[in-house]
Image (tube, rainbow, N blue to C red; front, side, top):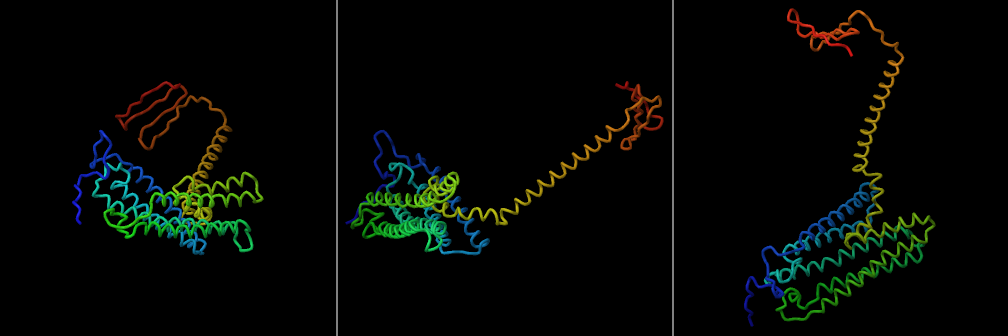
Length: 345
């Protein structure tokens, strides 16, 4: 059985009454998607780069979680690039402004997008949980309940994202039916899968936030310092989930990078040297001015003299005669010179 080809300008969804499909320049959120997406990718890349540089160059101690962070970054960059491309071809438009013939390609990319998310997000959360273990339970004999809670979060994260990956990969049998509904086969209820995935994801996020807050609250330190330490782990709330999770995991290396990195300390030392030099010159100038002012203040007061004083201006060859009553200026040389007299004030 063959199906008739879909006309090129057929919309993917019938528009509401009184609205016509616009395939040329439809309203879209692509500009926002592009701006937010590139910003998040830049923030995450910078955070992972700082951490990797600090661990590999400054500390010279790369551990397995550092490579996991790089895997999470690579997955997120691919994930973000696909999402931005999907936005450019119609994902952020209304359905009636998308051509039906373009839907198969978009659904295929959406499935690739779904498949990249579980390993990337799972790597990011595993990375953060390992960092929390390094901080709050560095030895097997320490940590107590915090260590057990983190081990439980790690196990739940690994199992959940493995299940999530296979669910997205084999949501339809055969797989072609994911992006081509005309193919015979069976599919799971995708909306129910997305809802349950979002709920479990939220619980894991809350666990990763609550465990360090709980551990910090039981530390012997002033309340102000406790709140400051807790706020570091809440930074992830301000960013997209994957970006915030990775940035939080990288933040413990930021102080070491600032203190030891030649990339930072070099320019800072230069700025400090220039500032010190300018300050020193300013202080010397003020000291010289103060010294001259002091010497002038100790000179005897000026007394009038009947004899004129002649001052030769070497740079113009003109002469000025000063007397108590007038100032005389001679311009020119030889017979062409003339004296102009001005009353002294």
